Length: 355
Image 1 (tube, helix red, strand yellow):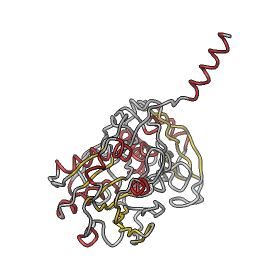
Image 2 (tube, one colour; image 1 turned 180 degrees about the vertical axis):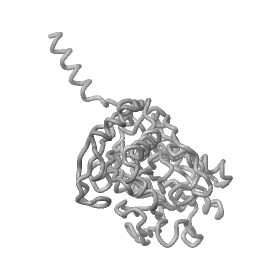
Image 3 (cartoon, rainbow, N blue to C red; image 1 turned 30 degrees about the vertical axis):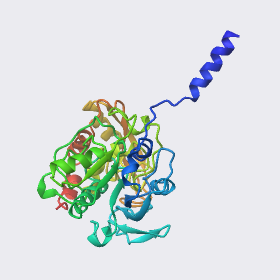
Image 4 (tube, rainbow, N blue to C red; image 1 turned 120 degrees about the vertical axis):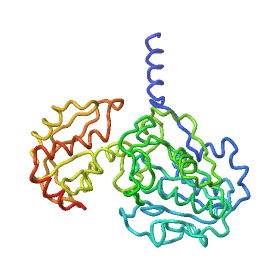
């Protein structure tokens, strides 16, 4: 009898969540009564397919079900549905008879005409915790334009999927400022989207009437997998909740166009390879440096689109062994250094093409 009871308790424990349960900003907005101040206001919603509550109900649907007056929608890069390619210009459109103004088309900022008739803007988009990602720049632009029109901005906070502890990489120099990387923060900044909004407002003196709706239950040490939330691919090449960490580890290297970094294959940003690399030798040299928190596994693959399409690539699969010690930018710099050391002629040829 006692053994049977213990087994029953064990089975119950197996059904309990392994990680924390986090309420998003969109969840706490209603649970904690933040909606009362804007219940009669005309709302413009800046969002996309990642704007969902913890039950995966789209934010637009949540707002309408709660009787909120949503009058216009605004979408970032990749469009409202998230299906657009990187850098693709997205046209304005409609969703459920509401106008969708693209902030990655004819303009990247909401115009006074777009904002006409709006009393408050709500921003709810999942960021990835890396500077070179345009959703945060869109937030910056929205806050600036809203401040000019004296329209309050509400940001529904969401987790930094990497975690809130990893801060790595240099600051952005003003001469390299662009839509892809707009503010002077580390490459891995460790902030949530709500914290970024507060940083933008204070550091850049935007003076927006800003309110951040906090999460409940999120801790800085949490990776996205530990939140109990479901990951919605934030853009076409960020399919998994751990992809942002690898995006920070190989993304800059990929922009040099001398190797493939898994974009065009099933492991975006998690592999580094090229036809001219010896995968076993590359892995051995990388591992000999004993960089903490990472192991490089020899890997061979064939991209089916994009860089080096249909070519047999040899290289490494990056495996994180200890997230507490892992430094994405150190991995990136090590990859670059070893490539240059082992293949000086190939790297020189590609780097000569870089402006």
